[in-house]
Image (tube, rainbow, N blue to C red; front, side, top):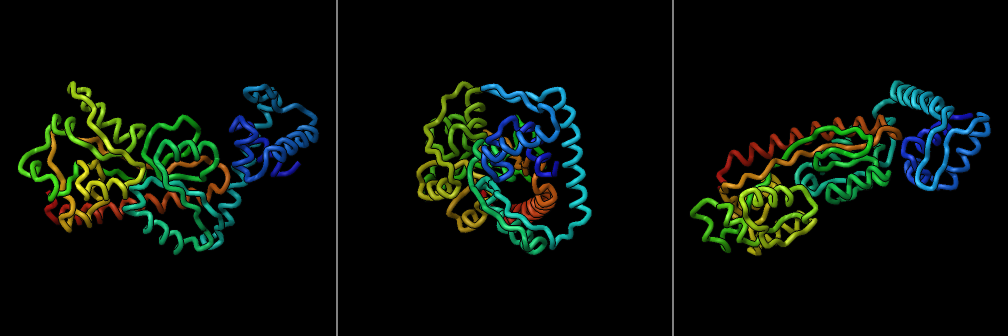
Length: 309
């Protein structure tokens, strides 16, 4: 019996899937299955009952699982006690929501490179529902995404929040510049926003429905850069985090519309599943918290120091 066998069994049982365990352990499904069979033979007991739809721990399997969990935790604590910052090595598959790409991701990467030079990243940019699915499936090690209740066992650490605003290109929509944007204006305008499955869109839709108003005509995109560009070109009213367009606001290419419809702030968090590379992920999440809060203070100071309305 060795640690690899214990770890293999632990992740199969925890994820309730040979395929997910294989992704988590960076191996193949047949290898995971073979290692589990060997482990059961070494112990002389059946650990899992396999059905067509799920896996169930046997009575002996429940006992072994409890000890496996302790074994893995002790292993992590040992590695943590022996580790130095410069000794941390890993390639982290990091999922990132695009709002963070436009605000503090570069600062985060630079800080990690200073503190942990042997840590590298494979970065994936996507919307929150897709990032959550990828973390749960073991396709991403961690993600910076919109805060929401995860329907799987994970660590979730709050990072920051952004307020979305209604933005226009002043040269194309002068009729809105002399008054407050009303709910009816929003309902009757072309709105540039995130796709209908995302939280910003659902918030907009729910607020309009509460006032008996129809959904507006929309042009949607997963890409924040595309939304910003379309708003600059006068294609509609953009719903965009204003801290991500400080430069455009300063140059008067975009302007914030005062509105009677106040969108909810969107909170971002760092999400990962405990297990492999825990020490690295814990360290990176702390850096992300520090960088996010520092960067947002800096951006808010810039925003509050100028009149963008």
